[in-house]
Length: 467
Image (tube, rainbow, N blue to C red; front, side):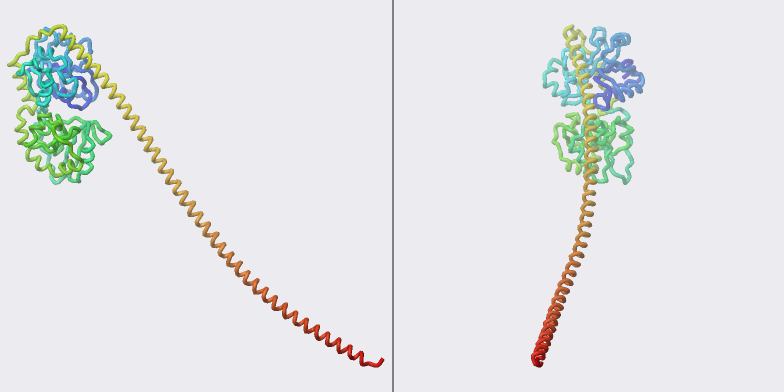
């Protein structure tokens, strides 16, 4: 497959998400083969745009750049790989004679649909779909009714060639290391991770840093450091190509560990997890902890069952051979169809702008919520500290009050005892005084009686004397 110049269109190149990785891997593959690569996007940004720049002879253009058509006309591409309804004006013109591949990577995302089917039908050498499910759903919608069935093919998210060369990690007696890849991990899967025994280790890659994930590109180097993968979609293809057991589960549910019994059904749905029931956290944890050995036994057979289109190089070679054998129709796109396509592209740009603005607002809202949560946590911590301080003060006050009460009670008891003693002594004194008083009274009475008798005796003496 010798190409001189390849054009790829993609709505954005910013983050490590599915379609952006598809575009990056295509650009890297074509550039490594010696081709010049032009990537046209509505929105570009770090870190993915930097990876594009490092891929070789790759140039990133904005879809609104006024010099794009002149650039393409001066050096027409041999292949235009079109995604997300972005078709430069030159490719729509009768002057463009290269092959056209229109890639549909979802049956649910609006920009992945055939929004201008007449343009695609006349322009595309072949329309490809990331899974049989995507092809069937778009076919059932009626947008492909007038398409030549020979120009509709499944191109199922093949993995870069070097991933198929990954050497298995030597684990020894250590824990099973599973790579969890997700930008939208569901609650039950997050809870299951917390239930895993020490014999299972999780490496979490994704955009949800608040849940412990680290944004990173999943490549051959990373896959060589793990024993298995937990993910959906394109990452499942990576795992199978690398010979790693894969637990297929995420926000849409999933079958769990893939084997020969469920891999065909899972692949039909692009390994998205659709078509299977959701599981609870305890079930997921049990399966992750005890199902690895059985899943590992099925890896080689699954890789063989998926066939050569599991790997990007062979898959592209087969697709290019099909393009060479089936040249695209004579363009003949009338002005009305071109205008319709340009309107679709404009809507795509508006959608991208709105999405980016919503993402910025979402990021700002998330930051505000995070800041509010931190303030709330700080307030709760301060309230807890204040409550603890108040509790200590109350306890200290209660202890001091109890001590004072005890001291006062002891003093009162001593004073009461002293008063009782004094009362007892007073009563004894009063009794003694009474006894003394009575004794004194008796003595006085006896003395008075004696005096009376003496006086009476003297009176008698006086009366007996002669006058």
